[in-house]
Image 1 (tube, rainbow, N blue to C red):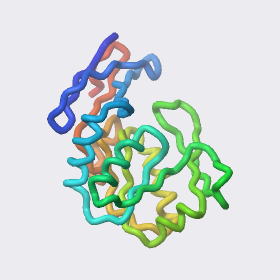
Image 2 (tube, rainbow, N blue to C red; image 1 turned 180 degrees about the horizontal axis):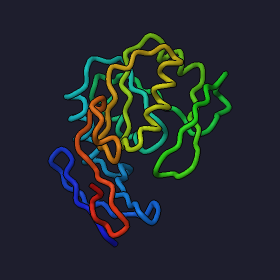
Image 3 (cartoon, helix red, strand yellow; image 1 turned 180 degrees about the vertical axis):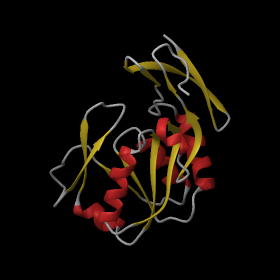
Length: 185
């Protein structure tokens, strides 16, 4: 299997390449279980973050990151937009999102209790990887619906279209690859 080596906050990892379609492969960055990257990425992102009250993320891969960021930042809370409606959610907000890694329409849900936590707060939107920006748009819509003030959008990695964004704070670039495993230019 082809791999791509990346460096994040001084730590190197080899990421396997996976086919999205005949013309595109992605380097799979999986944060789950990588405590070393989680800790250093949280520290580095916090060093770049403006003042904030809460962190907002989408379920699931970025949860360890926002937990560690919250822990390192005086135990500030975080809110997770869920991929499924939960019985405890009253009047859940439903936002549609399409992601390059799932290749199908998804939904993010946030109950009224979490919407109330966000209301009027300065928040960071945090994800592990931002690529097409669709998940980011969905989280921004949630923040707007909750009357929260987004102070920054942050991720460990930016890939694809997001590489050229100047409104996202990130630690490194993750390239897309062609069908042969070459970096797409």
